[in-house]
Structure formats: structure tokens, C-alpha cells
Image (cartoon, rainbow, N blue to C red; front, top):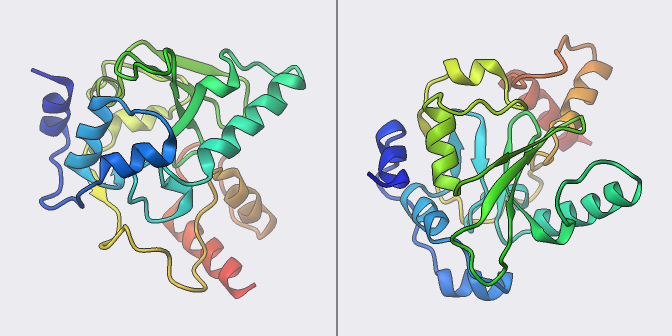
Length: 225
């Protein structure tokens, strides 16, 4: 059984994910993508696994979760600054391509070595608000199937993830459309929401999922501003 087959058994995909023009996507990025990622994106479309892990998609509903958006470049620049400041970055920043995020603010990266042969790429996860990194020696679909089945325990992920439903929840319909005028996309680091929540009197722990009510309150407040 392939890893994508195993994943679809754990998390049934939606009935009608949007088609992807992979030639256009790879031309925009300037490099080829792993075949297992293209299978994943074509099978599921944009959305979240277990309400926690969001893999970037060419039809991501905001720039924060769009594979061809600004986040991968922004993250590379941040990692270069971190390494220059002496903070631990276990791989050359330019070899790390951000392709996912959790609702707790951890980032998932491909280790793009060798650059011209994407199928063997492994992935690594950094800690949202700390120096920790975790590397998974396998492909993205293998990682998702292993984490969601409980076989792999990522130190940066909350223990409650293993108790969560393994369902895949698609993003809102017509996810390829740009956000409506005046909408407020979520920041890539949920620490922004956490800091706002504490400053506004919400009782919120430093780790774990940000409750939907607090996300809605942050969105409403920032839209109003």
C-alpha cells in the first residue's frame, strides 16, 4: 500500500477537489515538486488534517497557505537572519522551502536536496516559539500517514493531536478565489493571535490550539481596525 493510499484510508478526501495546472505551478516556483505532494494536493485540495496541519496548496485560500505565495520566501529570509544571529537552524536556509503550517504556529519545510530531484526530499518541522527542530526521514505523505496514525510523535505537536479525529476538512468553497475585499487573513504565526488575546483579557495557554472563538474575535477586531 502506498503512503497516499494509507492516508486516504485514515482521512477520506473530499469529493471534488479543484484541479491544478502543475506546469504553471512549477514554472512559477522555478523547480519541480515531489510526485507524492502533487498526488496529495490533487486528491485533497486545500484544507486541514485533524483540524491542525495545513499543507500549502496552489489554491490556498489566503497567501499564508498558498504554495506559490510569499510565505516560503519570507521564511527563508527569517531563517537566514536566525542563523546569522546564532540561533539553531540545522540546514542551509536556502535549502528549506516552507510547505505547511500548524494551527499552533509550527512550520513544515521540505529539505530541497538534491534540488533537481524532488522525490527523495525529506521534511523538517521547527518549534513555533523555541529552538527545537524535528526531521522526518521520509516523504510528506509518509509523514502525514505516520503522524495521524499515531506511529510518529513530533515533539513540537501537542499530545492532544493523537486524540483528535483524523478527518480532513476542506477550506471554504472556491478556495482558489482571492480573499474578499476587506477580509483579514490569519497570520502564519498564531503567536500574533495569542499575544492579542492575552492583551485583551482572554485566558489562553501558551501551547495547543487557539479556540475558534478567539480567532473569530481577533479577525473581527483587526477587520474593524
